[in-house]
Length: 128
Image 1 (cartoon, rainbow, N blue to C red):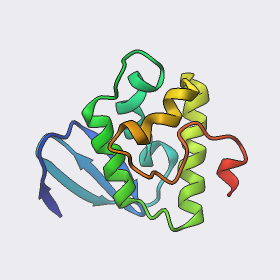
Image 2: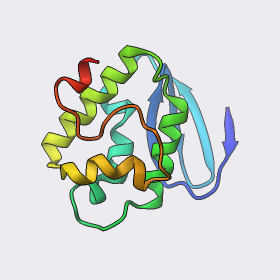
Image 3: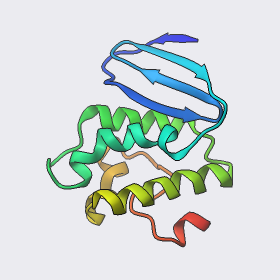
């Protein structure tokens, strides 16, 4: 599958067993043997990190586009998907010292996306 898109920076994610690489104008999808935290959401978190740790006042547009892409392409109706993404975000938020107020506002600042997983989750958030 190859689809033309405009304005994306590099981003890497996994949706189910499909691996997507989004570069400046192209999307390519590849089959992967399994999804892991590092594959599925790490690219998104890297694009948003400067905002989430407080280095910049607004997230980069590529962060918001990646968040939108993840929202529309991950199967968040599955409990396992939500839990996996949540645990990955929690692990990264603690390690990279995200500012809780920034993390909670990210989906709103990025096109008011109703992202189903909090960006500063507690242990309980990831088990629901």
